[in-house]
Image 1 (cartoon, helix red, strand yellow):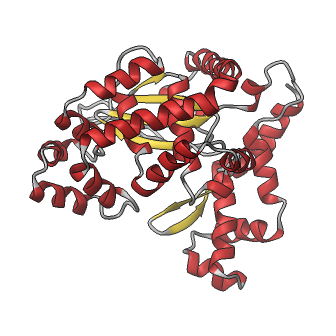
Image 2 (spheres, rainbow, N blue to C red):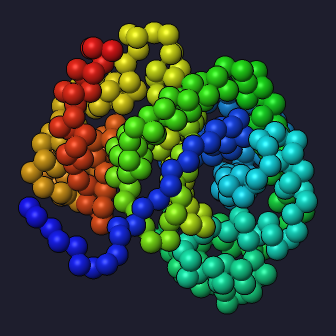
Length: 347
């Protein structure tokens, strides 16, 4: 097909950046261990279960507060604004030095350029703006309550909690294996930096995230890619001002760089996912067309909880996603299965 562009406007694009740090890993660990919705799909599920059994009481209390108020979101927001080195002490000092208005504003979610003034007024505890911000985020399962919390919490108590929970988590979970974790993140960072020079931005984001097709958006100038171990196999997405953030799972090759017999994590998950009869039926069903959860349960004679469990596994394996309340097959992931297996066999 020959296309003549007479619009006079270039297609939107974005710059891709990579960062890694033990602080990101700490904040994501706190998020993961308090996220009951995804807990049973995490690679570290058993490790986290053992950890929770021996968790010091003071850290358990802080994590309970995180679970109740989603303050893991505060830590990730703050890390995105934090521009110093990635040392725990300087980060906690940064938190303690923020004004009441600054910390409320930073912790409130970014929901678009047009809502920034509302976000600013909400950080000043303007009741009308708080209500508008909650209404604008009604379709997010935790944002409205989180916004209410951030705008009304005692800031000194919030600061004390944030400093305490990340410091205690760092001491109990990160420090004992800090060298190992740092080396894995560094290995992945270096590998991705090399590949970034060989790919276009969208292609690179798709490859790094295990299949996310992120097309340029008008207000997004930068895509930040952050490797993480904690949330494997999930890629966590977030928006900041003029920036999209992907916390992506490090590859198996980065964990075991000297062992050529170690397969890619998503290769394993995909084959595990299609190796179960119910999930294979779901794949065939979605190959024919997109379906709602109700349609899937009706056609396969399944309970909703059972269907939802299998669909979570298919989504974790990057074989299925959901759009407009309908599950759909990720055709590219299915068609590339044999290529990924061939790549592994020849590595």
